[in-house]
Length: 93
Image (cartoon, rainbow, N blue to C red):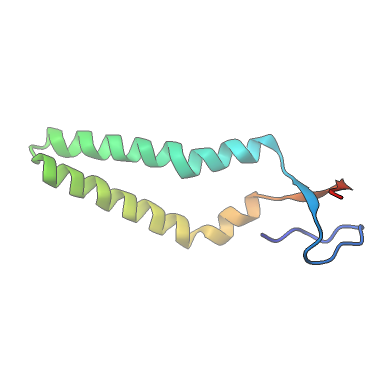
């Protein structure tokens, strides 16, 4: 994790408190858990409604997840820019 330079005197290995906005936590949960779950359910429903058997529907859902996480991986630098953290003034002693 990269944290932009702050005015404090910190070194690698120092114990500090890292903070971020609550909205970033919700966004991370959305990207990591909610959207993939929705994708699995939708892919499974569509595959089943098109007459795929259970094995085929499961493979289609798995394929959709692989594609989803591949896209997330390819967009990681863009996503990384939306998550910013700061070091709190209170350090852990």
